[in-house]
Amino acid sequence: GNAVTLDIHRDDELGELAREIYTLSEELEHLKNERTEFLSSVSHELRTPLTYLKGYADILNRPNLSVEDREKFASIIQEEATQLTEMVKELFLLAKMDKNQFSISKEEIPLCDFLKEIVSKLTPAFMEKNISLQLICAKDIYVNIDPIRFRQVINNLLDNARKYSSESTSVEVVVHEQKYGVSIDVRDQGEGIPEKDLPYIWERLYRVDKSRSRALGGTGLGLAIVKEIVELHGGTVEVKSVLGEGTTFTINISR
Ligand code: ADP
Image (cartoon, rainbow, N blue to C red):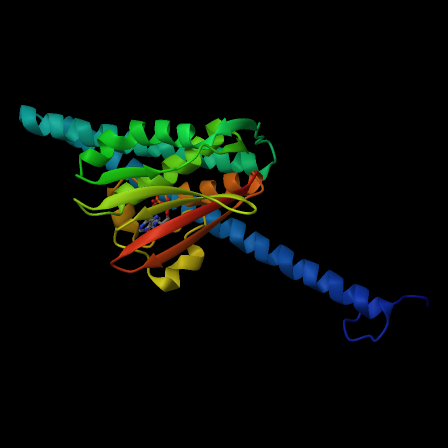
């Protein structure tokens, strides 16, 4: 009959079409695997705090519990619940981004003033670890950004800088005017990130050290959100890190 076979080895347009279909189906398969993997990580991640919650809630019911223990366990429950809420919030945000239901509305913002406000709000948390937090921003440059979304970007980067730094170090936010626009560095003198992990830190739920991140209240979603938001602004974000010396994240945006 007239049936044609789509053979990837054919040396004509049909072969080309067959190869394209083949590539697409491989990509689809890959995406399906990624989705399955992501879903199983999510359920694992959600189960961990839930297990703690249930465990400590059970203990609270025990008779003869001292007041101190009761308070201790209650505060653990509170922390775990907060972390769970945070993670669910971030997952929703990423899902919204995936469905293109996340919009940004840009405004002309004076960058130095904008950063100054964020930095001063975060200073008390840095003081708890005796980390000096400095903003170096010479002249006021106007940038076209969504202030609410961009605040989250800076917050996430600074939050990481604080979490992964030891006491009495310093963290700097440095703004440079560039030909293409402006760059913002967030520099810390923290533990650094192993080179082999660097390509993956932007992935959802990826953490260099799972238990350490969890203990510090991390969700493994912060950098994925940073990258999405910066890219929605038409910008880029890069990382440079030296193990044991520190990490610098650089955001580049045009004006
Ligand atoms: P988390 O909630 O675990 O901090 P992120 O997505 O914000 O998740 O970061 C992913 C991982 O990258 C972290 O778990 C940590 O291992 C590493 N990381 C991020 N920022 C830093 C930093 N400033 N210094 C060292 N490691 C970092």
